[in-house]
Image (tube, rainbow, N blue to C red):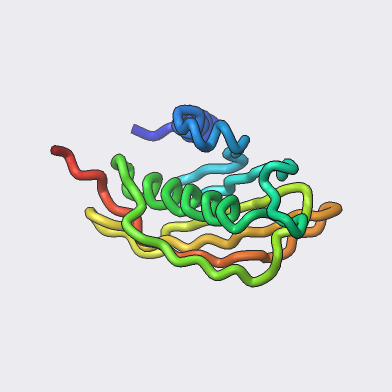
Length: 141
């Protein structure tokens, strides 16, 4: 069954709304299509570390969740993150973070996904982190 892009995005937003930690942080699903996602977070003072930029855990959360959305929409089954790696390439300074992820190699049991995380300041995006992860089908016990 095929759904419109608007319905697909609405379904993704319902999933995000059921994640208490995502709600606590204030994450927003800006775009979603099979195997691609744009997950965003407006930065608040409580998201920052002592030097005034986004805490690495906040950046890492955003990458992890974007990777999982990309893998889950590509595989079209319930999924979890099996592993991921992140490289911080510059401090995340700005008003907003954007995580753009895609599923690049997909099978029946896993998806290998990549994510770029950008900090947006005064409308300018700057790459602050790169992540790659393996998303796997959730085992049915």
